[in-house]
Amino acid sequence: MSKKTKDKNKDKGKTEAGNDQSEGSLPVGAAVGMKIAFALAAVAVVVVGMYLLRENVLSSSTRPAGESVRVRLVDPPEWLPGNITDGVVADIQSVIKDRGTLDNDLTKDVFNAAGKNPWISKVHKVTRQKDRSVLVRADFRRPFALVAFRPLAPGDVRVVDSGGVVLPLLPRLLNARGYVRIREITTDPPPAGEKWDSKPLADALKLLGLIKDKPYISRIGSIEIERIIKARVHLVMYAFAGDGRRVEILFGRFPADDLDYCVSPARKIANLDKVVSANGGRFDAIREIDLRHDEPHYRPY
Image (cartoon, rainbow, N blue to C red; front, side):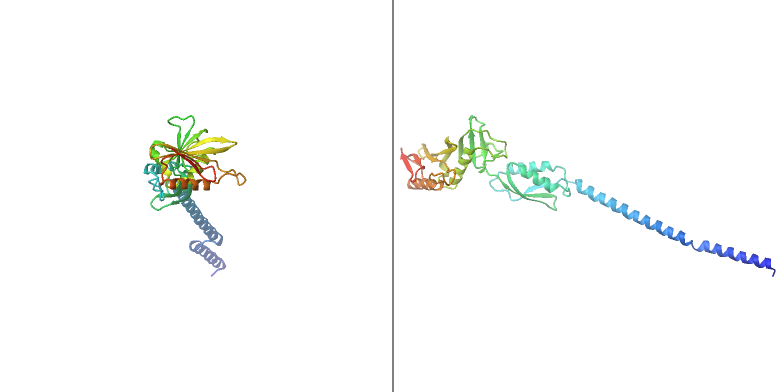
């Protein structure tokens, strides 16, 4: 075989070997590049998937899902009329209208709305339930007294709780005979849900608190501001006797501090108990009871 022929055969072998390599595999650099490209594509898919999932979760937690949340009160007091309970629920419900149970701010908004309701004195807890409801546990303000203020007109009467907070309740909706009326308050009442800023009213409510559980409380018709001397409020109570007459009970004032001597409120009420007990548990035939001294003084008719 000639040298020329051998060289041709040699070149032909190299060409065939090169063709086999291109058909069976890629160069090392190309293979690495492909792996990197696939890896980047996989990462991109994961990132996009996580982003879409996050957007879905966030949107579902801020958008209502179907029926709106229902507000329920936990163990409302028996003395609270049903129509008032319904009104409190409706008031809170209006704040979270069309909201879902997954709403991030739901319980906070319910808590704040309940705390602003005039009938609620303190909100203890707000919790979500699986039945698409929100439970509100709270303390409620109870009607304690009727307050008449000057100038006296048919509408110049308010219902207050024991702390002097005005309640959104018309006096005619109460059994007026079951509540003591406080008279002669000269400051205007605040809006419902706010405390009435009045020293005479505060003292009258304090006196009512001392006798509210007494057996003769149903005979006490009113507590009135008799006079105010040097910022000291002097109080008088009026009771009904069995014969239809009115009994005047002079309570006097509360001491301003420990150095302000007067007969203690506890002693005054104990003396009133003594007089009523000695009179058969009634006020009959009594014109006046003066509690401002160490021993009670009373005048019969």
